[in-house]
Length: 92
Image (tube, rainbow, N blue to C red; front, side):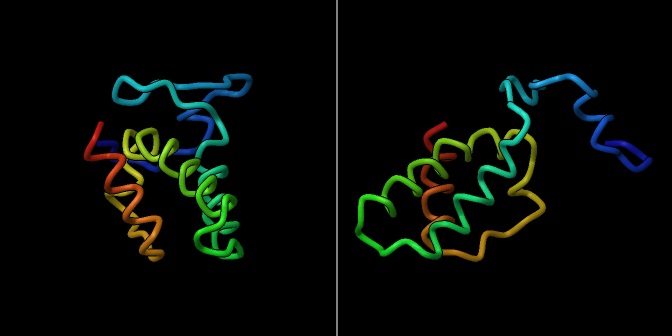
């Protein structure tokens, strides 16, 4: 672990589109995509195709976010998302 603060450009230099964390290539925008899908899920009717698609998208992003350690420092409040993330990460 670092003993100093980390800036975004320390993690992903200007002009870089991807970085490798724990063996996974992670594209810039992954965290923002996860947050956007999580917010959209709040407006989606459970059981609909949209709801299922959003949960699938969140599940697809979960291993990458686990690789950067996001779920070690943040707790998911939405139980549907927490279930999908847990199920996805346990399969990885």
